Image (cartoon, rainbow, N blue to C red; front, side, top):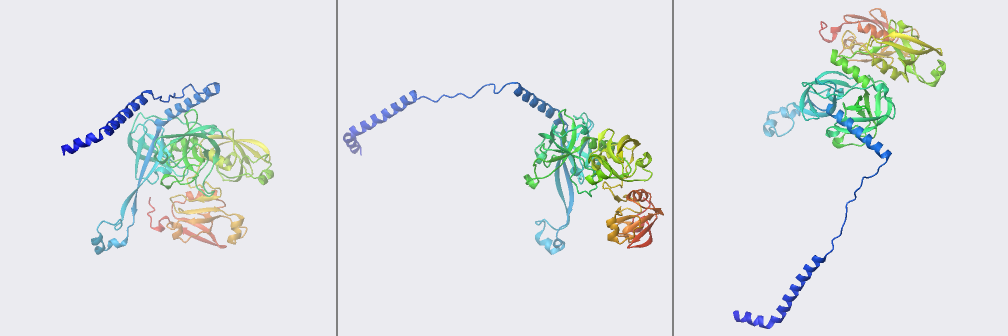
Amino acid sequence: MRANTEKFLRENLLGLSLTFIGVVCLILAGVLYEGHRVFPQFTLAEGAGLNGQEIDTLEQQNKAYERIAQSVTPAIVAIQSTQVIKVQQSPFMMDPLFRQFFGNMLPFGIPREQREHALGSGVIVSADGYIVTNNHVVSKATEIEVLLADKRSFKGKVVGADPQTDIAVIKINATNLPVVPFGDSGQMKVGDIVMAFGNPFGQWFTVTRGSVSALGRSLSDPRSDKFEDFIQTDAAINPGNSGGALVNVRGQVIGINTAIIPGSAGPGGEGSFIGIGFAIPSNTAKHVMEDLIKTGKVSRGYLGVTIRSLDEGLAKQFRVPDLSGALVQDVSRGGPADKAGIKNGDVVRKINGKTVEDSDQLTAMVTDLNPGTEVKLDILRDGQPMTIHLTLGERPANLSVVAGVGKAPSEGALRGITVQNLTPDLRDRLGLASDVRGVVITEIDPDSPAAQAQLQPGDVIESINRHSINSVADFNRWAGEAKGQTLLRINRQGNGVFIVITPGDNGDDDSQ
């Protein structure tokens, strides 16, 4: 073996030597190349960027927005509400053999509880723990958890809620909390810059910026029982922003974010921002919030009139130079407007010096004031300007937002009845004579005393306890006083009948 190796080396010595020399040369060449290699040189762009007075102005604006965000964010909270619902399970699980075979493997059987979670926002309005949010954020909650910007968490309790404005107040057990001041939403103009604060899609403590796009907006069906006078904004509002703050450039809350017109589905399937969001004006929110904290219920101002917006025909007939204002169609006897001398056909143009654009705005202005407030109305009567001073009454709890529609109180003999004024169209459809007076029943709660007494939609209520009913205003007044056994005069398909309604007819205890 050794002899063979020596023979191989002798015969191939020259080749091996040349190969070794070649490898050494390649190594030396590589070393020399790396030593003389020129690496590319580069320098990151530097400099002060753009400058000039206009750039400085923008930079100052940025600092102002940063200051607003830093000031407001600590007073914004995230609200997680939990609703416990009963889930009805399959009746198969009531079979012992079925349950013995499947055990608890299947998600059905005996009714069991299921928890649903919702996320919203809120604004701390007092250092001792009062928070304003949307009613729809907490309305069905069995548990409420409130997360502060500093990561502290508290259990929340609903103090009061007002579904008609979608405002609710909750309370947490804490002190020395950061707060944000409320501004005057009545001073906002289209084009004003605003910032929206909240927790969209669970992205905690988000701030967006935009402008006021419009004022006096409404989203509900005209027959809705809600007060809506929204601020429209293009500051991004998404699911989870509900109950958060819409803030002006002074860092004041001028709205409570409440709704969007949704675009395509976002995370979780919710509609997302398309540039149109809505906020409850701060003046409305403040009034509702203070009443809920003080008394647990909302008291609203009341004129005692039925009104409608103007169109070109009405403006011409009542000698109004444009379409601004609210036309008085009916005056409730004995109400504040009646006592002050308001008449049918008057057009309310201003209230306390502020222009009234339409009937919805007049309703919002009046209901944002407290009962007992003295107001000045600028009106046109037959085209002649007049000024009338009056003291607002308290709006009846059962008075509908919709003109010409009434609802009986939630307690009493007539609870569960909804009515509307007897219009010429309704009179024709019901086949009633021209001398029939009253209000038409449009809805009846099937569990109400009225339903037990066989009242039905289409019946015309002509009197309550012998008091004539000529309008919804009359119905609201006397229905509110119908506490015990109540006598009604009903016109049904042209025939007059008397019906006695007893509050306990549906099995309820009428002693409450």
